[in-house]
Image 1 (spheres, rainbow, N blue to C red):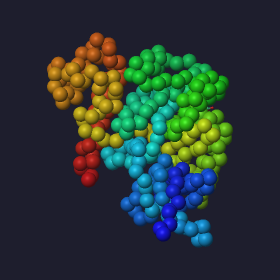
Image 2: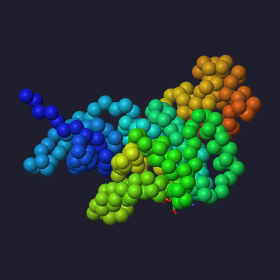
Image 3: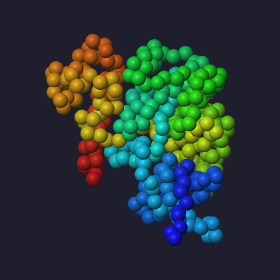
Image 4: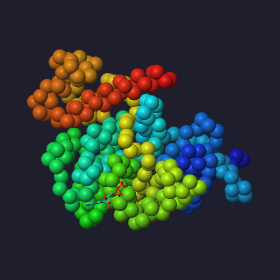
Length: 303
Ligand code: GDP
Ligand code: ZN
């Protein structure tokens, strides 16, 4: 009779070291076998080892339903988290919102087939007219937008509802209130986890691991790799898939391989002129197209 291997979910990952949660909430510290097997938080894995020795190895990764990745500055793809239900992009009036980063998150999620919600935190503070019109553009691009204040509690019930039964990766620029939201939502469980994982020899400034925080109503994912985010490289023609409102009209372009930059008969450019497509979102699309070209070139040079 073959013995079945224990199976569980990776809830914390720092390099080749992971924490795997098995049934009945048993947490196991484990290493990942070999060099080839890539394991990230959210992965379902199989372990080999024994309680007698206390030595455990992740020996297999089960198929993923999705994988959220980023491009590093050399244009190579890095995996951040697997098997997500949604990406929660957190923005705030302060620090000033970089909408182009927001668009890159949305595009990255879209490339991976992961749903997105925009969480507008600090709604107790006034917003600029630019931010207001950006929210209008997102809503009309079918991105759910939720206004909350981690400080005043406004909208937090609705947010909890949106997160219930789901595994959500929270992304956002530093300072938008992610840690505050994590703590509010998890009842302090977030900080507890992080203290553990960062309490190694080098002290506070050790590279922070990625982690899943399990709450009674759902799971939150924190990944340091989502700051200053660039989406994975896709063929130029597919960049538009990150911008639903642009992709929606692209079938009406004269050329099937239209990149919507200077081509004649482009339905996207006409849409922008007619103000049916938000000009800033279009600008964002063009920037991602350029970034993709640049990263493609860098990758070509460095292998
Ligand atoms: P992080 O870098 O995204 O993790 O941001 P933090 O959670 O550390 O929050 C950055 C700052 O924003 C802190 O001073 C928080 O107290 C503040 N902050 C968080 N949420 C809110 C909010 O809803 N309203 C206001 N006014 N400030 C907030
Ligand atoms: Zn076009």
